[in-house]
Length: 491
Image (cartoon, rainbow, N blue to C red; front, side, top):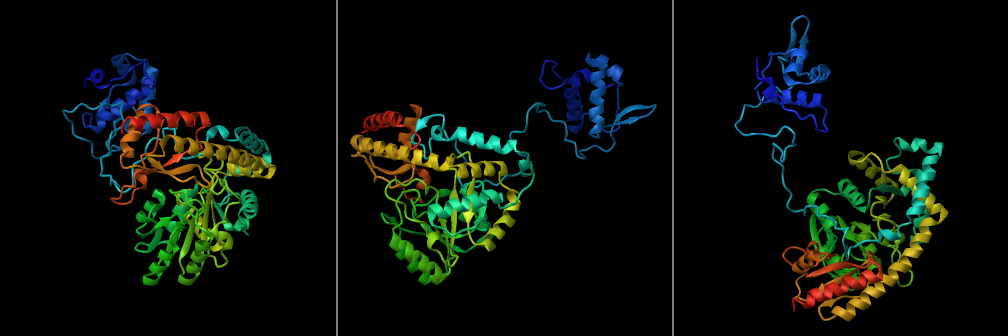
């Protein structure tokens, strides 16, 4: 008889049931080849005495092994390990001790590492800092909670707990269409909209549906990192053009179009990412004319249209598009909160249909209950009130941050007051390299992006986006004081 008391190790005080520990121990020994096929096991009474456990525990352990196919119970003969094991190639016994209670630290197969895309980094939102995004303390959580509860309380809405339209709940798309038509000068219906889990998902679907390997897309010399790498991942060729104080250089785009075929142009015209500049009206008109003439697609990512602090914001390109050349991407993740993963794509219905086809491959549908809650908040005016309140607050925070930053660090940081958005594009003096500065700040409990994500190729911009929306005025003052102290100690 095998030394079962030595072979089967378990801990009675463990959170895992003893019968499962016993079953898993036997399975591990069979996998390693120590307990082979067709071996007779002690009966439950004898094995319970060997292991000093209750017989019912052994009965459950054997039942588990039988259910998984590791043992066979032969009437009048006893219990045997299966002749045909679930794993046909058991591992040979090794001198190396392995833990039976730990998951493998690495795969047993090769994983291709994509070094072109940076690995995810912790957001560090538990620390104060110049985070690029909205302040969660301003989120209309009470109104959102009430709307969500109201939706869930109506029996008529139970059908939305199942599968819904891939493009999104029609009621929400109708409400969203009305809102976009009123605020952005569009002329859409719900059929022009597909909801997505944030704007990045919308861009992913567009790329899959429209682009082929080897096609050329024009982007700014500075551009949104994840858009660039999405296009690269699709095998597209990126052609970069300058971005100045008036936005992306449309004249350069025209010169390129005269030389070669362009499939698309990606722009963030309202507030260029990352530099925050606005594309002027004359260039917008010219860009639309070029799209019609040369047949390229304009992808307009309007990630922060709702945050503009001067007069009325310039209407998006799509509002003047009469030929169906513009695809418009937006999101409520910036307007309300990043956790509200609700974005949208605006396009003619034939493209929306194609996007729904591709959406089925990664996400059958969106979040219908959240969409209904948001629809209710739009109809009741809660989102409009929130945006008005938030816009006034962010306007004050922008003015305070820019004025105080200018007072303290105008000799080493160059920036222009942004017309909108929630961040300042700050160019640091060469005497103050940002990456080591951010490490020192983090050690003191302050977050500042190192800006490396905005560099293209070997070019070092030594610039970064400094979010002002995430902190109130007191927090901003403390943050800039610490930033000033840390920088001055280096110079």
